[in-house]
Image (cartoon, rainbow over all chains, first blue to last red; front, side, top):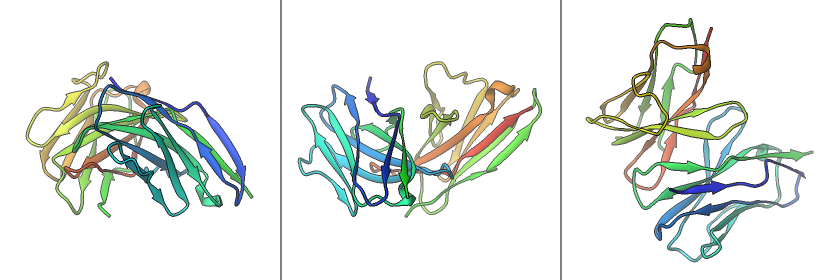
Length: 115
Length: 114
């Protein structure tokens, strides 16, 4: 079974600063996908970024980037130039293999951006 | 992007009654839908995986006779909480897979059992 661990229950950072959220996972699979989801107060789950395990290049989406270390089973999210709208719960998630597989979520990190 | 809706967005029911929550994929066909439960300030816990035209696969510890899941078409899955009790009060979220590696989440349903 897969497990996902987020060791930072809460974080806060000043607006415009950079923040990194940590995530580690455990799996015996070789092919898998990793995701970061954002859940704002509305509670709508929003995909922030995804990483295919077979790709060595770290994924980036505008201000969001990941540091994927496959051997260490680490998948951290960096948010640059943080904005007030980034305030939310952030969940790291694992999906085995490909297509219609279930997501395994970490416990989440509550991020607060301070004006 | 793909859109998933849920209805109702919130519901209050009396203890002992049943309540049905609908999850629809609006602009794509979803062969697989997932139902999650989320308690306040906690993560999403997968309850069951629903495949169109077949029985749902429940996670360990989830009572399948209490949480009835039906996936009758490629765009609709329903979760029925039977004989609801206050401890069933929670936030229920569905997601739909588009046969690739992405899942699209519904906005969630807040259930309160009095």
